Every structure is written in C-alpha cells, then in structure tokens.
Length: 112
Image: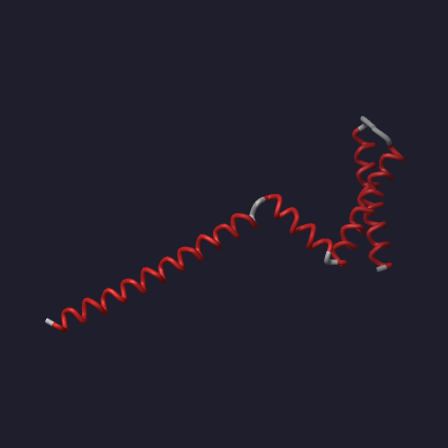
C-alpha cells in the first residue's frame, strides 16, 4: 500500500512540474507572439528600414546617387522635349533620359 501512495505522490509532483513548465512555455510563446506581431506592423517596418538607412552610409550614398541619376535623366528629357505627344519624340526622349541617367550614374560612381 505504501508503494502506491509513494507512486501517487511522485506522479503528482511530476504532473505539477510539467504543468508549471507548460505554463512557463505558454507565457514565453505569448510574449514572442506579441513581439512578432508588433515587429511586422507596417509602421514599425517603415521605422526599422529608415533606421537601417540612417546607420548605413553606403546605402545612403547609393540612394543619393540613384536619385541624382534618375532626376538628371528626367529633367534632361523634359528640358529638351517637354510634353510631347509625338510617338517618335517620346521614344527619343526616353532614350535621352536613359543615356543621361546612365552617364550621371557612371560619373557619380567613378568619383566614389
């Protein structure tokens, strides 16, 4: 009879330990879920992206170079052809825009 009581006591202790372990793991899982759901919110993704850009000088430089190249190409097309409705002027304008963008990009990259 004593061995059954001893086994029951041991079993109760094991059950209590496992329930406590389960509760701890469940709480950790809830905390991790809250962190994950917070980190995938669009505003937080946006903030984290800008923090990465802020702390990465190479990325900042690349963005500025790309913006300068695209802006230069676009402005050259607008200055030379304006708002043209002619199909051929549009094609030549896009070619000019591409060429100027490529030229500025190469100049900026060679100076870096």
